[in-house]
Length: 373
Image (tube, rainbow, N blue to C red):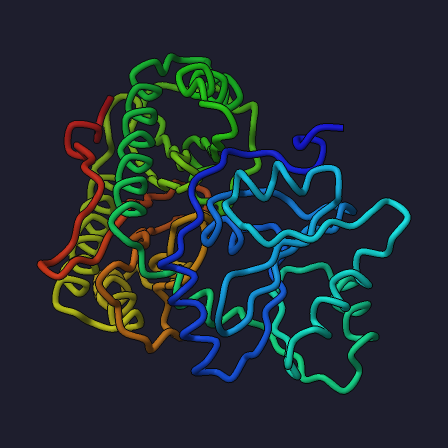
């Protein structure tokens, strides 16, 4: 059995700077010990994105010192070398891996354990059974805070993924023809994508009145002349997502469409300006929402103004009315106001934003040139 039997993905590098930041937060929050399984938080820290399986694989992280890797014996050496963790404990097929982890925890002075929030409940429960007097907590808030601020390397990957997404959508729009279904357009996009190994993509294509549905589950509507077309897509580079929505008209746009499009585009610009002015997340949402409401379409703007993007296509920070937190330099998120008129059409304009000290970096989309195609 080889390593890919357990996990799939590309190995990056173990980021010791991020480990230091994490351990500082653990000390501040009095978290003595962290059990971290494979997943997105593991990828952020150790450069490897794999899925949890029945082959129990975790790292044990304390407030000080290097992490320990606990993995199946037959892959421990390869996994340890690729990730860059020197201290690795293997478990045999006849052993209970939870008991192996328990023994390692018992060697420490730990009296409180934090878990990744997405660790399998069955594993958490079995560990808790072995340490019934310990205190337990989730480390979700700490990871959300740390991961939401993207470093220079992450920002470069995000911008590349964003621009690649833009280019793929535009290239796909240029091949629209009367009679093509949403499924046909999806196939065109996939053919152009030609994803690198282990990279991922997301795509939703909708026409005319289907563009007012969130989401649209239509797959076989045939494209007609003068139809509104919405393509919402995302692709990854180095596991980091871009997420872009382009709304166009295949043919000639109606005066009503142009009215709605102009309102949404202005709302998008106002939200970006609020970010530049260092407004809080809820105020960025309000900047877009208040304008759309003022123009008489508030009830047709039915979702939040944006969401964070990174290793996950939806993560912190969320640009929503209930988020009072400030936008911090390094935060990366979407701005995507929309108006959805039932049984008519919908318009959404979605850009990717990186908050910087000087303002913002954003995806470059020639929207005016794409208004009618």
